[in-house]
Image 1: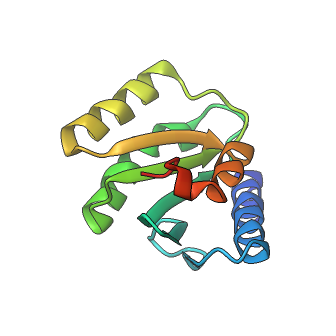
Image 2 (image 1 turned 120 degrees about the vertical axis):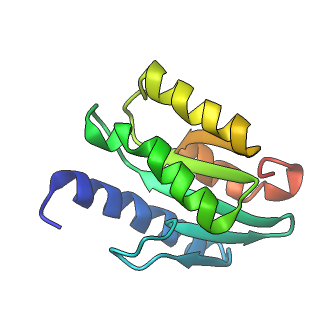
Image 3 (image 1 turned 90 degrees about the vertical axis):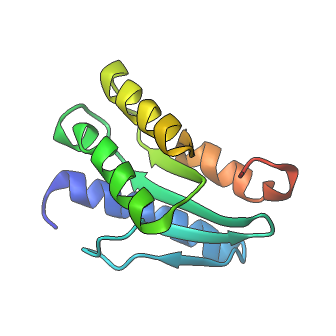
Length: 130
């Protein structure tokens, strides 16, 4: 866990978990190292699937996003998935790949930052999630 990318991702996951706990939002968080999506959050509209990718620069983490989306779709069969990301703008080619997969497997894909995600968790009844 000494890798700065892993530490950065862990910190983002910790922030999301703290937010859920502080706001009495029911959730399940994947254990570190598990091959699971980071969060499954319970809402009045069903389950919210979210994965934290606190990426602040380009590189292989970004290029792994399409595979991660595919792997988690196969496991959870989600209809909506949220990638909670850092400041880095995901490259157009990776976005294209991710969006083609979402269309092909018929799920909605949302790239949001921490503030967008948490600001809208409380407003889930208003239709932000799914």
